[in-house]
Every structure is written in C-alpha cells, then in structure tokens.
Image (cartoon, rainbow, N blue to C red; front, top):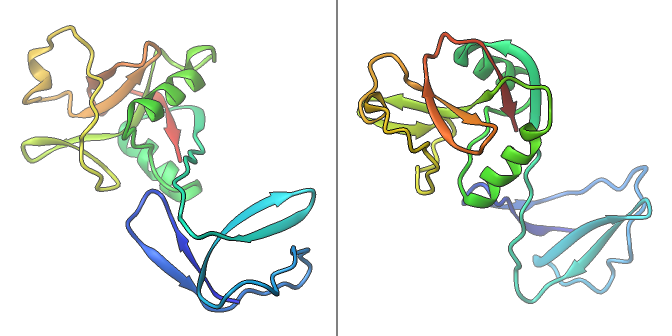
Length: 174
C-alpha cells in the first residue's frame, strides 16, 4: 500500500513506498485506491486507515518541558540530542499551549524557546519565519538590536522576553 502523508510543520509531501504490517493490527484497506490520500487514526489497538477525498489540516504539538537549568546553547543541544529541537511558537495557539504547560508547574519564571537574534533579526532555530509575535510590553530598548540579550524566552504570562544566552533556565523541547 502507498499513501501520501503530509507533515504539518513542513511543506513536504512524502510518499510511503512500503509499510510493514508485521505485529500490527490494521483496518481493512482492500477498498483503497493506489496512491490515495488517507487518514490514519490509532483506536483500540488498531490503526484505522480511511481514504479521504479532501485533505484536512490538523494540529499536533508535543511540548516537552525540561526542568533542568541550562544556558540557551546547552538547552538547544539537549533538545536536539534527546528530542527534536527547542520549540518554535508559530501561532497564538502554540504560544497558549506552551504557556499552559509552564504556568502551573515548578519551572523557572521563564523558559528558553527556539528564538535567537542572528544577524539583524530574531529567528526561530528551525528556520520558520517570525510571523506571530508575543513580545512583552516593557519596551526594552535592547529587544530591537540586542547587544547581550540575544536569546528568546517565554514567561509564565505567555510573553516573549529577550534574555542573556548565558542565563540558566528551564526550556521547552519538541
């Protein structure tokens, strides 16, 4: 069976050539057309496969709050070695979800996210553009062209703050 799979955090459309069903329980796929768009859903220990005429978007974000205090570079290294990356908060929804994760926990007052000032602009470490923004309203003059505070953190209030990259904070991986 082959299927087109879309990964929501990239623009890649991939084709899966072979699926091994060894040790897996599948729903009946005999009526699926070759190279069709399908949705996959895990339910009651069975992978359900359904053909779709229209692709639907979905939202999936697995945030991992790490309660170890590290510099921004150490946090980035930890996330890339043990997970995927420092989180990028690309929308208000993602920002709210991250805030909710840290708001009632015992993490530091702010946590590192994958935001860094490089060249002459703030950028996400995964390469995504900085379309949505949630900077704090303190008017820190160092935010526009930081000399020392060149790394981004998320406060428990859900605001972004530029911090000294050598400060040791908890952090969020994806």
